[in-house]
Structures are given as C-alpha cells and as structure tokens.
Length: 458
Image (cartoon, rainbow, N blue to C red):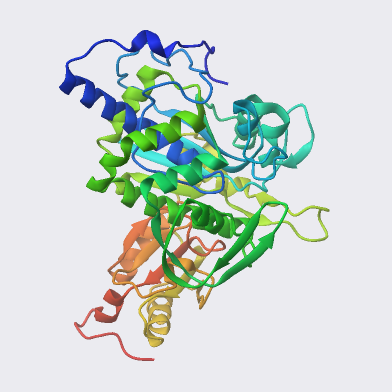
C-alpha cells in the first residue's frame, strides 16, 4: 500500500532560521501532527483536532517518499489522499506501561478510521470502522478487523481495510498507542463531556474501573479513555464509536482555544513519543496549510453501516457490514463510483422509504408527537419516536439537529425542507437503524404552520 518507504534523518532538516520564521514554521508543523495523532489517539477514542506536524522524529521514522516528489517544502495537494488512522490498544500487554516502541504499536486497533483529504473542496471525510467488523484477513483467516494490526502489522491492517472497502487505495497511515491518548488529553488539560447516563464497569484484565454519574463533567486523560472504552450498554461497540465522535468534537473545541497554544511544547513531546507514520515532512506541511481552510462544516464523520450478528450465526459477536449502504458512502465521500450506485443516487427521493427517527431534546414531551404528525403528513410515513438511547438528545438543546446517519444528504435535506428548520450534520451519533435522525431543539417549539399559526398541540 502506498509508495516505497525510505528513512529520513530529521537532523538534516534543522537549518538555521530567522526567529520569527522559525516560530511560524514550527506552528505549521505542529498543526498537522496534532491533527493526525489526535485522530489516531483514540486507541479507544477518536480525537480529531486541527493538528500538529512532526517537528522531530515520531515513534518510528518510517517516513515515506512524498506522493508529490519527495520535497520537504510544503506540498500543494492536487488530488485527494486516503490516510488510515489506527489507535492501538496495548492496555492488556504483559509489560504494562514498560513498552518498547515496536510493542506499543503492535497490538489490536481499538480505533480504525479511514480519512480522505479533498483539496478541491477543503473537505475531510472520515469513515469509522467498528473494531468488531467481520472480515477476511488477507493470507490469514476470518476474524475481527481489529486483529489485523496485531497479526500482520500495518501492512495487513492496510490490506484488510482496503479489501473490506472494495479495494480502495490507502496512501498513508498513522498509528498511536493507548498512552498517547491519555497523555495528549492531559496535556490539553482535560475536556468537558456530557455523560448521558450512569456508567459502571470493572474489568481487571483490561485494568478498567469505570464509574461515572450522568451529567456534565470535566474528564482527564484516564477518565476520558474510560468513557470512550465503555461498551456495556445496548449498543456495545457501536455506542463506543458514537462516544468517540462526541469526544472528537470536545477535543477539537478545546484545541482551538487560544489558551492551548501555550501547551504546544508539551503536546509535541507527547506526539513524538507515541506517533508512528509514513507521512513525509513535505506532505505534513501541505496538510497543515490545508487545515487552515477547514471548519467543522467541512468535516464529515461516518460509521461503516451494518448490523450486529445474531447469536445463532457465529460463536463470536461481530459487526456485519452492509455493503450496499457502504458502497453509497464510498461513492459520495470517497469518490468510488459504480453504475449501480449512480443509478440509485440519481433516482427521485421516495419520502416513504426514508427511515426517520425523532428524538426529543426540547424538554417538552408533546413536541415529539407534534414532529411525528408533521413529518408523516409531509409523506415521511416510516417515522418513529425514540425516547432513549440517543445521547445527543440526553439534555435540552436550543437548535434542532438533522443527523444524516448514513451520509444520505438528499434524505436529510428533504427532512429539513419538510419541517423548515434544522442544522444538517453528517455524523453517526443518531439512531443506528435510521437513515436520518431528527433531534428536536427548543426552536421547534416556535415553529409555525403554513398559515402562520403555531403547530397544534397533541
């Protein structure tokens, strides 16, 4: 996967610079590294933030030749690139915290993300692959996809992900270990998270003692990792993927605060000790420049669609990928086209076929029933109310959210046109069985019908 690897001696590039130029160049590098390592730092969590480039060697200097000619000056990307990001779980390793660098990145991958950077639209698309996804590991056997890195290193991990996703090309990779995420979050000073429900779980083999009450709490690195590793609810590993996205947003918001810049030296030290990548210096500088044009509206985070395996299917519990919906996601967000997918995309939207879920975050019980009536009257016949299990509706919200759970923007826009309000988000934090989830905010209570009157009570 990708181009031929060659080693870089980072000391060769430490040229004297005017102080102001040196500082600016350092910040550009830092941006890119934190971005990629923040993504990978999820060893159980997602941690995307605008992000810092390697100013010195990462964990292992597998620096590659550049996609655009091997330059160590900033690369201006002309074509989209796909980057595989792995967060490695080494919590159960017999050496505890005393790892060699190779041991730290050789475990199972708790987080598996495929990232597509699209320079033409200043867009970043992320596909999260649940760790329990059932796949055929090339040259090995059928197994959970998180086992690929442990059985065959980054090469097998890349081949397994590519094969799962219709042989999509993977150009580069980034790996970060468990301790990297904890240290990174601590260096940021922790983040506030709204924990939607009490969480309690103890696992001595994994050194987990999770005990959270519901409500807004500031979590340090250790507790943040426990929050994203929790999987003992109805959604199991899929609930964990959704919590990863919540943490992603919180880390991003914390990272862009002006007070974070004073913490950059500490953040860089964490990155240097925990990141393994084959991205070249010039490529990283190019990504750093690319990131200056990105805002949250240009970041789409999706989850591999599928279902839980049935108890009578397999001995182990798996996530079974839905390849039809996956093909649509790959076509829309990773530019893999097929005549079948194009035909579906170009067909008229049948509102009655859209599976729609309504969740209530208004604080007023009757609002969900009003929304249900409104949507069904507009033609969304397959609409239901879900009273629990959607974390984004766990506390009152001012703004209505329209979540394109599987990336179907046509369906999401049809819903927005029907109710007249709502912020569309491409994310997988809604009802996993729906095409679109509407999380009602207090702005829905002020919604009026076509005659200028408030919606009738039910």
